[in-house]
Image (tube, rainbow, N blue to C red; front, side, top):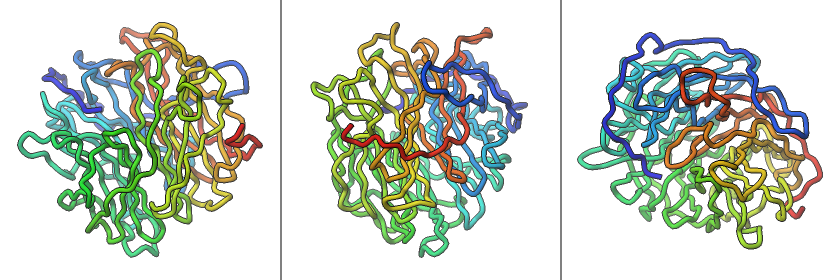
Length: 470
């Protein structure tokens, strides 16, 4: 999972630093079967740096506050790690229309920054300060990421230059950051924001940092009490201010740790579950990185890909565990997208929970990638995007819908294998689940790829009658 970088030559593209362009619906491939919603293209890669792969956009995060949705993602992916810049796409009217642009001040490709690459974008909102925070990893030549920085915006469409969350010292390297903020006005730590990453040069030691001023300044990094090793932690904040951070360990287990004092200290991690994972076909780059969300009462859901429910581990399901305030994790439950005897392989979940719901009526929207046939090669694998939902906290699920695909693996970026990103996510506005995801189409230009960010708009959440036992 560690980033690999090498020296590059880049050409500045300053004129595109703050481009804001409205985009309209664009055609995308869809599999036969249930009617799929039309997709809208959110952005496109404008860069021409010959050391990177173009046109490629991968690895999105998305967050919602009120009727505003903001996503960020890598633009111009390098095969060895990182991208030319982080792009953003925003809707201020509940997903009806979108604008997009590129974060300023990070990379030399973008034109005004000092780093050669940037990676692992993630997005959050601090309602106390009234700012959006887009975080990523800063990468210089020849080493893993050597900085974590965050750009801020008061409206999701006009972005300030980044401020540093942390800078590596000596031979340190960083990987897999994530950011969240305490959005509950009655919480004792309302408005505090929390950043997580791991130190690759210390065997992926997990660390946390806290901001109490809207991301302007950040505390020195701290590790949980047991100094765990892993990556991909996704901090979440309960209504009472408890911070819960699920992550995947180097030993292929999901664990979590917490803080009840605003990040002044962090507990030792506890086991959520071991992971049993099928190696997805065609050399595609996937992993058990978790996708985690929290309901309105503080119940945390953490999901990942896992093959434990299939005899002989021939394919992965999307599975999850849940807990209140990060303790007493439930038995692992399978999302019943299809029977365990099917040929379908599922991976890269974007697990969304509507925070206006909770308990047994919590609403879940799940986006994911999949292969219809798990047994496939680089030449024959067919990559698709799916969605299903639940209005009963996962007790029952709707039938799945195919949103995009089939894509050939040659139509997506190459980074340690075919690559659409190590994660996706989902967010709710007015009861509907939104996501954005990479869709690869045949190239229609001189660029090798035509891989861009798309959304299916807000998808309805339905209960259905399919249970985990089906």
